[in-house]
Length: 458
Image 1 (cartoon, rainbow, N blue to C red):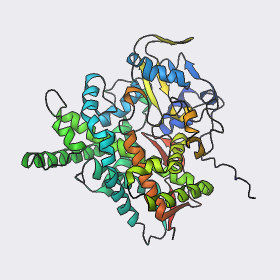
Image 2 (cartoon, rainbow, N blue to C red):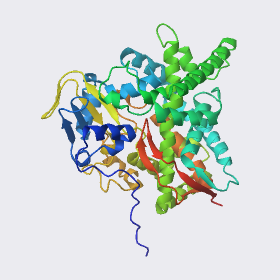
Image 3 (cartoon, rainbow, N blue to C red):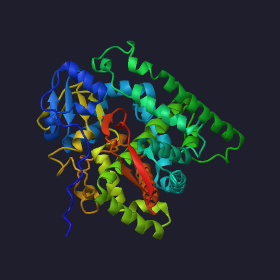
Image 4 (tube, helix red, strand yellow):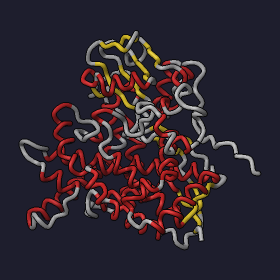
């Protein structure tokens, strides 16, 4: 009888055994913040630093403390200062970065799009987009960059579902611009950590201005196309995300700028998180072929018997578990940042006003007190019967609390449909050059891409 192979341990920075100097920290945070975290962050319930760059810092790993900050005492915590300095130049008053009444208006305007009924209605367009994308691999020879391809696939799905195929612009150009956007504007600038005034130029972001201008033009053109359609035939326009946003425009709803900001949020950040998670999932399955066989067997059983893609998420727990485990190891958003508005306490822990609270899905998902064999790719953790033993606040791929990702159900349905469609027809394998390194920008990206081969399963 064959022995069970040792689990696959995908690449990740080793925890630091001693703290970096201030200069080293600035360099690491700019290059790749995932390389900053030391042994205590993977072993302790929290790490509290009273001084240092940026003032008091609390790294929260304990699920109870995370719940306290994101749910129980959420009113005492605003968005983190450094996070806002990175994201607001890109997303402005989009749902990820808006606060107060602006956030409430945006959330209310978008809620109807992400009801279960609406999300189920997106399943068929998701399937058609995934099938059309898979057709491109027919007869393909040679290597692909799977990271780039998943960006293209999720763009196709987003364009077809939330925008009914009416995004102005060319997908290939879009993918290149997204990469450049995250390479420039989507990084921590050392001046942000040092608390430099906003008028002082951030040279990393200066390089991204042309890219931001591209996205603003794309959004303006997309919105104008739909406004024209609504003016000509109000009842004939698709009842999608874009139409709902535009119908919420007005004194009591969203401003034109807020609509544009939310379109950018979903075109840019919304699709990017799913793209990265899909790429990491297929990479991990390629390096753990014994796990991939289980997924393929499930897909081969379910798809011929169940043509309705709405039902795939519940019908394919093994496929879903592989995706959830990849998001545990490579959380699409590696950090959640908050700032204490007033003094607070959690048990014996005192949290001073102004403390920057870092909730790091990256370290929480790999914490040695919360997970068995945390560095290994073990999808069985998320199978029925095991999933219920995972604390709600130790697994945070979509955040938690009032600001939990509004598109979480959309993304889960999209992922299982995409994986089922692609893996039913093709097998993705790594190459000797496939040596991805997780790098935190706006999302957890594979540095060096994901060069892989794609072959028909026959």
